[in-house]
Amino acid sequence: MGFLKGISEAFHEGGWGMWPILVSSIVIIALIVERSVYTFKSSVDKDKLLALLKSQVMSGNVQGAIKVCSGNPTPMTRIIQAGLMKFNKSDHEVQAAMDEAALREMPKLNQRTPYLAMLANFAVMAGLLGTISGMIKAFGSVAGATTNKATILAEGISEALNCTAFGIGTSLIGLLGFSLLTGKTTNITDDINEVTVQVVNLVTAHRSQMQPGA
Image (cartoon, rainbow, N blue to C red; front, side):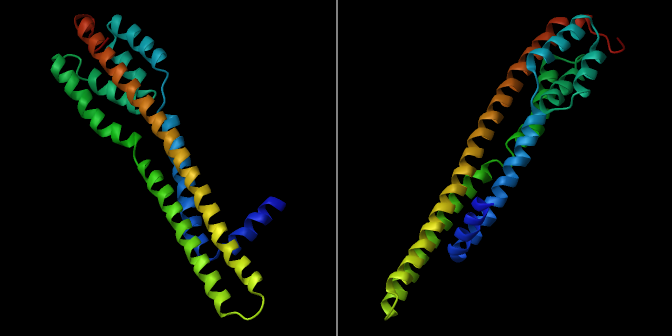
């Protein structure tokens, strides 16, 4: 409770500059949570998935392979499923179907994540603006005051430094979230590229054994 009280007092001491920082921090946290949930749901154990698909394809059961994908809907499985639906077509058509699905699915992985970097920069700039405003207010008040100059100056400097601290803190959260989510998205993208190539090769090598009604 003492910590929260201290944060509340510091917020009020920071003046108007704290409000845009607060808004950006709320949006940053909301984006981090939403993107984290999405990327977690989009993650797939690629080795397990490939083993399941390989067992189905090598036994000629294309419908079984499709069901493996549809039973675990993620960007990766939806892309693979699009290719498997064209298994009886040419290699080019199988690849084209996967590429088309990838164009729909891949942008969703990185959707809204770049806003974190923008909001992190905004928080720093808002903190800097609040800092400058606080310093101007402090020295302007001191210049026109006849008594309690030290108190007035201390209050102005406190306002300025609180804006700086909150702005930098919010920015750090945004940049950390951006870095972690970007890294996770890159890993998922790499896995998708690797698995789709292996599935295309698998379909190509075992097309003659695959039957629609198997």
